[in-house]
Length: 292
Image (cartoon, rainbow, N blue to C red):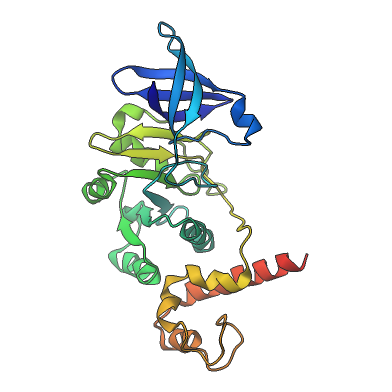
């Protein structure tokens, strides 16, 4: 019998089989021998143990379209990265780290800023200007005021979308609106430290009203970029692309080299200073890590 893993908790995998329901399954030992772990989003074949109790074993993991490391999910079409526009203010360095991670895995990203009702139209335009050349689609929504949801629903239609972002930005509240039957727990922002509780403790695949799925994943407060050479970081900042091959030096990393077109674009205001500063910080971090 074939189905899709919609949730994984403590070694149990919950497999949705069309017209049959959800089966609680364990993974067969062969996966441990192959050092392969089932992921939420996997299409699988299961052996039924009890039809009455809806239990079984995951016997085969069907070929994956892709598999993400963080969040650990499979077969996604796009990532919906949710940050709050305010309360808490967006951590753009964390945001850029996530864009690099998704870029390395060839996953398109939609940047979604929740709580847009807390900032002005001018402030929205300022945020949009930072990322307009990043290759991401940018949305401003408000779960509280139910603003921008129609456009978001259209983007999610027919896609399997992984949802990610820091805790306390309203991910679960948005998902509750998109899929009310999910009845997800929502958290409150701590006024003292302006951080949310980790209300999502596991990855879960949720079917939308239309033809699509969303994968909710636990919130994160930090991301470390692994296994990336510092010289390759520039490939994941899309606004640098049009200057490739135009700098004086081959292999220019756009930091200390003279006659660098990226730095000239920065001076001219064509490239966001904030994005560039985050690029330099990440480059230095990768370079220092390699020394050790």
